Amino acid sequence: MNDKLYPLKFEPIYQYRLWGGRRLAHLLSKPLPKDEPVGEAWLLSDRKDHASKVVDGPLKGKTITELMQKCPVELMGENNAHFKRFPLLLKFLDCHEVLSVQVHPSDDQTAYIPEGDTGKTEAWVVLETADDSIIYSGLKKGITKEDLMEAIKTNSVSKKLHRFIPKIDDAVFIHSGTVHTLGGAVVFEVQENSDVTFRLYDWDRKDPKTGKPRELQVEKAMACIDYNQVEIGPIVPVKSTEVKNAELLFDNEHFKLWRIESDTQVDVGFKDEPVILVCINGKGTMRYENKDYSIAKGEVMLLPAIVGQLELHPNSEITVLQIAIPQKNDKS
Image (cartoon, rainbow, N blue to C red; front, side, top):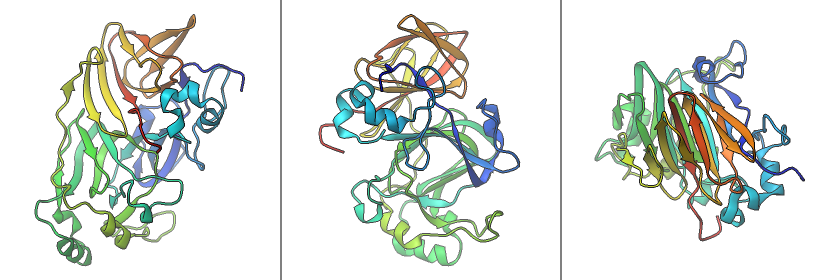
């Protein structure tokens, strides 16, 4: 691959989900598949079955998988030796109906993770709400394994879960092992690059496509639950000392996420490390090597490590989520 890396935009990959809706049409310019509920738009995905493709420039049509293989240093900087594939999976979710009650394994629960995959810690930023918006995040205090098993038998799992009504801009951190679900909302999701989900309960519904209930994985789910993950609410944003006009929402071993809101020029990205920008409101432009690169609501842009820091010039006011990958010391 001789073409040099530059700020890269990717085409969203839509996913049918029985709990999905049609609200992602407001966020994304790519038309939704006709006549079916779309629950997820995968914005940046380095998965064998769904690899994101560059939408413009000399590298148009190349996948993130190919870029990771052909130019890992230029893309990932010092982190290149630690990842064979891009370590994060970014999505918009349209949770028209409530998702299954579910849990994801942690990285060290290898018995429950397919080879080549990881555990799954994730986080949400709420973009739209509705009259029926609800987030279930963590168990109620004092709930035991025995309590949960009894609730599964009586279809009353939701009564054992902490819940709250989300507001727009709420940010929620879902550590691996946390029992969770949500409904009636559109959210941005950042997570480890994993698709391992164990369903504990699915509200006794049937998939219209098959006419059958979706499979549950109760035994695996129960094995992965962290009973210390209780009563999880929205995080309290912290004013950033690193990024101008930004608040830090998440900072953990897998990802850091800032929400940047500005009507004036602001720096985005960092020297010698990759950064992902997700525009959730407004639009703006960046200049790199004498060329302008635009970003608008619903678009995701990867700034490869070689690109470094750029100046983002909003057309008026812009809101951008900026995601970085913490430096690794040991092989991942």
